[in-house]
Amino acid sequence: MDKLMFQENDTIGSVIYVDTNQVLIEVEDNEKISLLNVGSIVAIQTTRSFEFTIGIIDKVRRKANELMELEDLTDEYNESLEEAYISSDVIQVSLIGTYKTVDGDTKNCFKRGIDTFPQITHHCYSINGNNLKLFMNIISDDVSLEKQLVIGKFAIDDNATAILDGDKFFQRHASILGSTGSGKSWCVANLIEEASKLNNPNIIVLDMHGEYKSLCDTDKKYADYYKIAGPEDLENDDEKYVFLPYWLLNRDEMLSMILDRSDNNAPNQASRFTFHVRELKEETLRELGKSKVLSTFTVDSPIPFNMEALITRLKEDDTKKGIGANNKPVKGEWEGKLTRFISRLETKIMDKRYGFLFQPNINTLNYDWLSKLLCKMIGADYERKGIKIIDFSEVPSDVLPIVTGIISRLLFDVQIWMDEEKRTPFAILCDEAHLYLPIQEDADSVQKQALGNFERIAKEGRKYGISLVVISQRPSDVSKTILSQCNNFLVLRLSNDRDKSVIRNLLPDALKSILDQLPLLDVGEAIAVGDAILLPSRIRLKTPQLKPMSATKNFWIEWENTKADNAAIIEAIENMRCQTKE
Image (tube, rainbow, N blue to C red; front, side, top):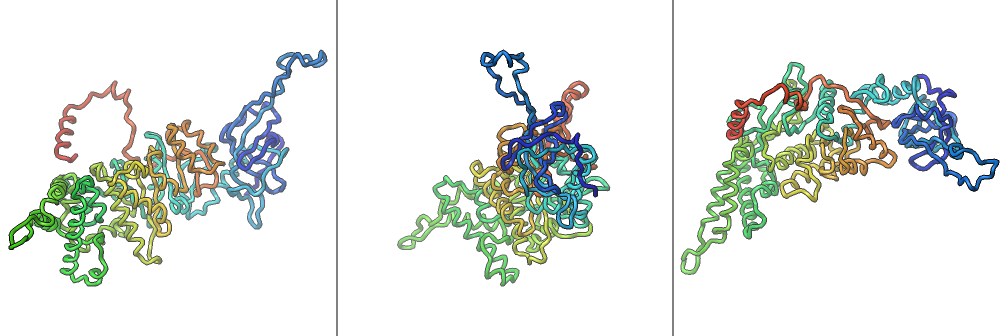
């Protein structure tokens, strides 16, 4: 590959100021200032002839020196007001990396980090034309063919394909952030489309609004569709409906849904619940002859038990009399202390919105059902695509954190308890993450259950082959612990100052100035920053072949051409009453 060659007309000016992150360049030819744009790439000469420091222009400004007081001028220098100004053009450059024409046996390579800082009076050159094409090719070619994740085109050069390192993107967690309507769904669809080209992709998409179902519907589908069973699906045996039976919940998850901590009898209620659940799980293991599990299991172990039997035992405790002197009945130890707890539990069980938890398919009581579920989620099957879309659109918002938390905890635990050499990596794409992964201070007891599971994956998942991709329109509302563990960011248009501030705090100082472009991004444009791409870049995302169902309505046009459908409104009301769209 040819090396970058700079001519006299590529010279911008000379260095007049240097610090650890930025350089100021005084532009020598004032006419060139109009050709310099924010976001353009420049090369700065170093003390080594084969090495240049690469930077991105942050600011272009005209600096006017102080006007000399005219009364202090002698007649000899008493010139016009305009001539008393001595003006100079200055550009501010953030230092990004180092380009070397030769580095050992390697030629024409770019790496992040600064090997040699520029010095005062060193020349700065614009990278444009053929040099820009060569440089962008160097960036793209740095990623070996088997790791390439094509995401779109570089905004500064439409002929250069923007390629991420697929390994690094998923290895170190990632975030896709942007305001509503900025193109996040297209970005996710692109990731799924590219991953579907691999032989054995393993991705789970937690789809909060059912918008990615369109990626599963056609002959060239990229993924398999699953749905958390809604009220109308409880009697359906189709494997696309996912049940998460109550016995999968650990003690704290179950109690966070049912226990009222303000109740004076809460400790008694938690105690009897824990006692009976453990006892019922033990009975299941004895009936099945699982002696090995029997010797080590805990109340949190995912072992099936009968909910009706649990309620029967709690009611016996709640009504059982004690025996006093002369064998006379007295108030029992637990009598009347469990009434409210039982009532809250029965209310949850009868509510069909929670049917996937408390009215699951009868098959879910089988001991081997959990193995089949997780093989379906992260195992191999020649009939499946390897990418799973799980639709959460009918899950009540109050238990959404519990449901996502159950799935993440089970997946993480399976990886922990699997032999290291037999683990295969998988990624969890967390759509609308702010709904169930809030910042710790704002989380209630239910949300904290899910938050703990996901934060554990964020901190430890890399060791076990689990990657998180956090997708949100409100990064300021997402757990700071989780976002701080992400090392790759695709940031689309953001205008909210709180959201921009969160992202700014996550990036190195040298890259913060690039975020000033966020409010100016067009729909489908993103700033790519992180381990997966050498040069922080503005990218135009490619249009996915299968588009998610997230198109923005054309309000003005539809108000002109389309009347509201009264029949559809009436049908929607019946659907609301039935808790079903079918």
